[in-house]
Length: 214
Length: 294
Image (cartoon, rainbow over all chains, first blue to last red; front, side):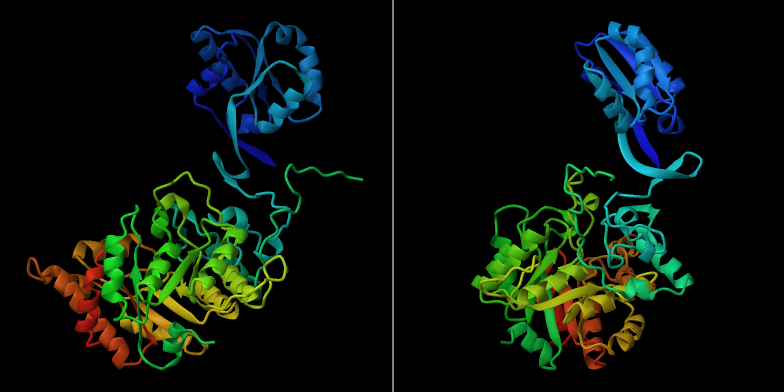
């Protein structure tokens, strides 16, 4: 799983940091490093930017994986610099922001927007693969998720907006249902596309979503 | 109880429908004028549902106006803006107000319209919406709850005979028929040979097909649609005809082309009728019909 993020505009970060002048920065060594939004280099850039606008950076760290249990250890090790700060700026996806928030009472400010869960198909090119709907249909759609890869999330085939295998919202994007058709045809399983897909259950796990593994 | 548009479809006559585009705002004068102009010349009038995802007076409001003016409305319903509760509720409202025809569409994508940041709903798709109508007719809603008073609709859908590639569209076409579509209004067609081939295929199904006729108002529009509108392809010879038309005569040439196509479809019994779309030029629809000899 890769959490794909984008750095917020610096003005927006500055606005969120209003009245908070001593800042500790946390980056993430996993997804945010890969997407070049919250790795070591970006954290150091952020430090410079903040100092340029008169903020004091009390310290920084790049936690190997901001969303896992080791985050607590990393925070304890950097406790001095964190105590000196009046807020934490987190350059990870929202999972890391949550994790940090759960250990610290000080304000935790996200520097990134979490866009989607995706994979890198070619270097620097990420695409969303799962909408976490709770009812996987990939077995019937040749491994292409219509809920995610179709702009409208259609379950029963393409809309009339598709043209030459591309999507009506963006000529650069593939029409998911054209791809599904082609792959099912190659697999000799077009009967799956002919089958009626019933109306989706959007409350498989009602929000807020929680689950307990027993 | 059969409906009058359904009666027209089943009568064997060459059926004619046209389209009313509701206004952006509360001034309904132009819409009333178009309704009055067309109501006795066509078998039914579609009312578009925030066409191209541009916010307008609602489709159901236009349909009610058609009823008040003594015409036969076809309620266009997209899945873009309403979830299953709202769609069902609107079908109940439509039925109680005498609207008996519904065209089920997916709906254009939100970002192509004028409220680009809106949330697209798409709780249902067009196939599921057709099934929803049949479910409500059975006296139950989508939650399997009993209705105190059911509905009855002549339900239709759309198909794009010139889509590329066509095969995935035809899978959906057949699913729409299985879901209860009785009639189809097609995306604009211009190549009658191509459309004839589509009809040879479509004739195996128990549905009525009305060919989409979009009035060409200029060569530029024809080229624009060919390049930008999915599933629309205007052959070069028609573009040449528009280019060759004398200044001030281009609209008349477009009317002549549309009329000629309709006449050919009727004379050859290619399909069951036509759906005439004169986007923004509704006042010339009677001229198109006259040019077709109707």
